[in-house]
Length: 593
Ligand code: VG1
Ligand code: CO
Image (tube, rainbow, N blue to C red; front, side):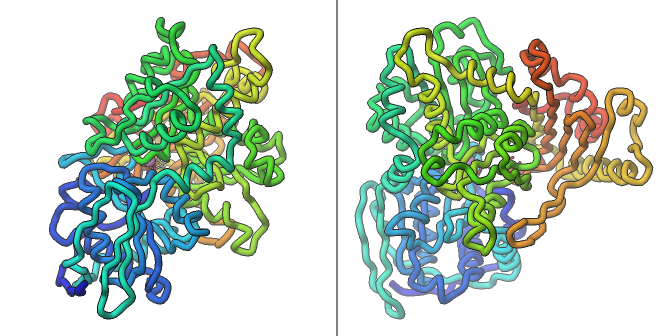
């Protein structure tokens, strides 16, 4: 291999967002674009650690994946990386990549590059993305992503082995390439399920779940949304549990996600939602009677999950709370002496808070994005009290635990199957206890956090910025005078507003501060309205409005309302306070989840 120094010029906007750098594929296809970012990444890592290291490079299989993997290998070879691990087909789900970094060969990998734009559509005219994960298997912290961005603004040259041949990714293999200045460069194509599956087998009781799935009255359907979850679903459900392949929907990875939007929610997972006997509002449809007992979907890179029962949609925030309440049914937590703490992102509903309180577990409220959970999971390695094992989650269909350092779609599915297996451990006499019964029982015990999220996608960035400025002005006025510039009367009429602020997080482990993480309106009765701008979009701005209302368990009728009805006044209030319609010219949101 020969190292070439290729002259280049900085590109604007190579700033990683909530989860890596995401842009239109065409942006990534510009000459030197990916190379600049990857060189900046290598330049931001300690050279003595990078030299001779092993790094993981794989993606969710979207359009441009194989090409990008080859480019990254060329740069890795030129920058002294010793070995690259690539999943067969260039595929690794985000949680599986985390598992490979942490577990393979005893955890020797130095880090990993994940090629994914996650739940964003893929294809020549859609999105592509790149993200760097560090040694613990989790997303790089902001100190690293900021350094990478800084470097992209001054880069003038990158190093690449342009004569590196393309390797065959279709099956496990090992390739070695001589280098003049360093030891040979090794590329290993590795099985993409083995490390991850081994880990899941430690986490869960596979025979117990298999027994549940063999019951005549049990049925399951899983939708991979044509993303990278497919191979994992085959390995787990079909090969391990013996489920028929007819239970798998869209489980062949496609470069374009078969033209779909690989985001597991009521809007985009329409086929699954209908099959589960639900309308797109999450309410039961007439098909409910024939629906399977359990349904689930994952997103493009398989780190998100949606959990459904027969005619029942489980909100991600409720799912998190229910899993925490049932942590004792999962062997991983039993073995480690029980769950030690719980964490959720700020916009996620407070349902889990009530469970944590009852279990006497510390609860952490972090900014949006999985990278903030990593330090909590590794607290004991960083000289603090042990906080793991922990379960954490986000309202955006993200759930996971400290078995890896990413959210994990299939983990959530197996966790739910463990809960179902626990409730149905006796031989079948009566009807099988399904998802709806478990959810209902949870509300009756802890109360219900009615929750909804409104997304306004591809809004003009300047309009979004004006709306944020208006809300910040509101917060300032509220803090100084006790009410905001708009309709103070209306607010106080309805309920008492106790706090309006901009969320900022001080990491309890390393003291780093993340500011400007969303504007919160907190009400006396526990209701909340939160506004923030997305950090994963590729065009314009996306405004997210999160709305939550708590219903105490004592009034059982009030626990069974339709979400849209229960939240109507709060939604109206959110729209009025923010003037989102006036600022954006949008009558309604793009997606409601
Ligand atoms: C969104 C979600 C956030 C999630 C992130 C990455 O970020 O809100 O909870 O962690 O996507 O998920 P934002 O900044 O657009 O709100 V994934 O599956 O795209 O890695
Ligand atoms: Co994802």
